[in-house]
Figure 1: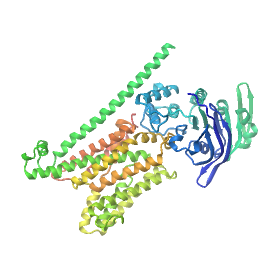
Figure 2: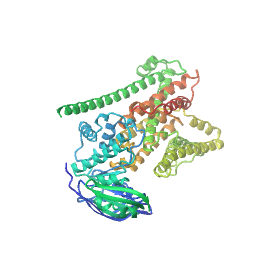
Figure 3: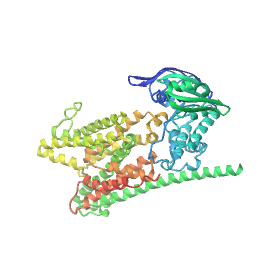
Figure 4: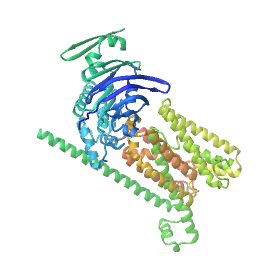
Length: 262
Length: 360
């Protein structure tokens, strides 16, 4: 199934009680299949923005997927379009991978037709195999490595076939192998299905290598928005992160070296 | 490539096979606990100071003419109500504990450990000693009816406080437990204060509260508790999927479209109805609500479709064992069952928390 709607964000304001974190943010339309990374220093408003898009924070402005006004939707309807994946799964959960993924499917209705028990199991297993942990389907979440747990967590989000997938620091606790595995997988799925992926990342090089677009935030304001080579510049990094950086481009992509603090 | 396909299909079939086996195994475990509870129930109704073995109890149920009047009275007014009350209270407290542990995301949560039972006792004590009850009730409302309603209101108030604290991010899991412990001490102190000023008659009634005992079980109170369980359980089971999803994290559950605030509130209503009704009729019974769900979780994992019924059955089983224990531990003396549940509960609980993490 190919998704064709693009995501429009304009005048988006969100925050906590009495404290505006993101103020009247406008971002150019995000096209189907695009992978967008939100970058910025601590307290830039990245996670708050992501949570607002997920419907977890109250927000005003426009967040529109195709013709659908996402901010106006009740939680259950919102969940049919958008899925949010928190940074990690909680510890000590006595569920198998398959149970956890089935749980995500059964939590609230997704399509129009309710699936039979057998169809639900098949669909959950399809996704578990797709993320590459088919052999671990009957393993308890407690027995998985950090990387495997993150793939299980991703399978939970993907099984709902969201049009917009929001990932909060999906790789910050993973080793190099799993960092790349998650990024490759997310990118491939976005291209296959037209799903929009928006994620908060800290690693500039990984963001540059695997994203179509970088949205650079500081103090709740947009600093740069564009393809990695345009958005990540030495000047932007100096302004936003207060570091001295060298950014070079060759046929392999963007190379970023951080030399000092400003 | 064809080889790989075959491999993949085999794995899938193996996985589905393993999943079906796991489901069958869980249903089997549920049936075994139910059967064990039934056996202990049979032992429970044939144990007691009056020498009436199971055969005679059975006769008393289906062939009353074969027994003397006093024997029939013992069976109908003592043995059966006590044993049934043990089953119902065990199921109710354990279900309340299981829900509480999930929605407060805290393995130490239970009506007893977090002060809900103490609050209910305080409410009951207010009604018993001071005759204080809510102004909404008609003036001619009988005092006996006032006690459980007061217990319910105080239990619900304490549950709301816990919920409020659990939701404010400042407190954290430890904060909720500490607050719950504070509630236990506060309400116990308030009950002690009421005991201090109570009349002789009210005092003896109050002591019954603080101990927890089945010997006030009547067919009327059994009916009310059975009704509460009958009403509450289907709603609990309907929320099973949502509660399973909640175990995976609150943000994740909300992103799956679950209205967590509403789920919590509905669950807290059920918890206070279950805990307060139980406490209203048998007094404070410790540890069933804590230990029952833990044993169920160890055996069946956290798919709430299985965990909730398993918790009820386990609670009923333990409570029945405790009821038998209360009759035979000290020959000739009927111990308050709350003392026995604590004696069984504490070692079981310590074993649970000191052993290796769960299997599933």
